[in-house]
Image (cartoon, rainbow, N blue to C red; front, side, top):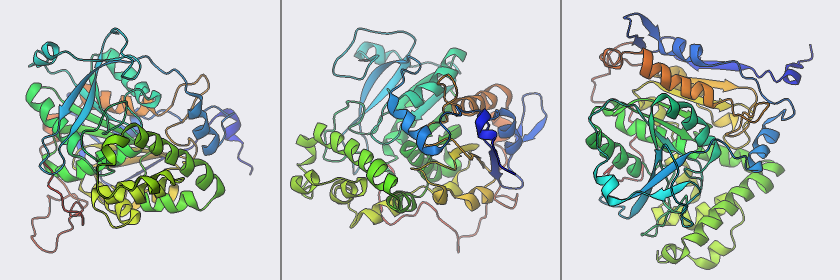
Length: 428
């Protein structure tokens, strides 16, 4: 029978997870599984029927819709990492606007030293940490849709901008890296010290989703976050690259567009980047596709021999198996960038701390509904609200289980270590 459900905007939703996901204890004392909780907070996916496939959905992001107006105060942190010094910018959500600063994205100004020194609190207000996609920043509409759903409920929120993004300036010849979790880690440590009683949550989008998942895998059972969600995660960057380059649209539209975005970022940071001995300005100038930029800038500045080695090493697909907090993944199966074949179906089934929600339609960071809203913001925000408002997080964290519902394997050998990658870098 011909399926015409798309004419009514009806997308199909699937839930992929371990047969026995972790048990969560509600404030009332009742028990629920992580899978049941995710199913409860995920509304039917109803999209704009005029944007009837992943390409149209993704192309629509280029319309630069206004999105919810979110205001920020920026703090520039100095990195404490032992190998990768420098600076990175964190944009903190504030309730109202400030005088415009032309050196920063719209609705963003710097926080004063006095304001920052007095920012600490002993309260229990929940905090949402956001990580944006490739070359994006706190100004991105997709990110603001989620913030707009939690801030009115009394949540605090902030965005960790990747180095060089959102009109921030790098001070060492390195841009962000797909597995560079260290600025996020430093931000979480600062939050824990500054707000010792606040529960912390995090959401990542596209490349930021990859970084967040890597961070969660590295932290494992010691993770300070209460729950996390990722949207349009590419999961396996090498597989995504090959899938994109296989088609004309992928190669000449998506890869070229992402390559141009990286080139614009390079030009804005060129004076510092060309100080790296392995950056050849003429080779960079000749780049057209994203992988070419990774080949001549990202790989050599981070110590990788090829862009393929960089893609393999920085992919978060293995880190997913080490996640030990409630975790929601959200992907569209027709996403032309974070492609179907890169989705780690079996890893989700193997890890009871994780649930994957897929829709057969939605594109990349899109899921546009009639009227312009983005569907994904509802299940993501409602997941966090449910965890914060209804779940006893302390009681729910008392028992760690592995894929068989038993305590973590105490064997020394052989043990699967998903975070022991080939580029050996200290986490701090």
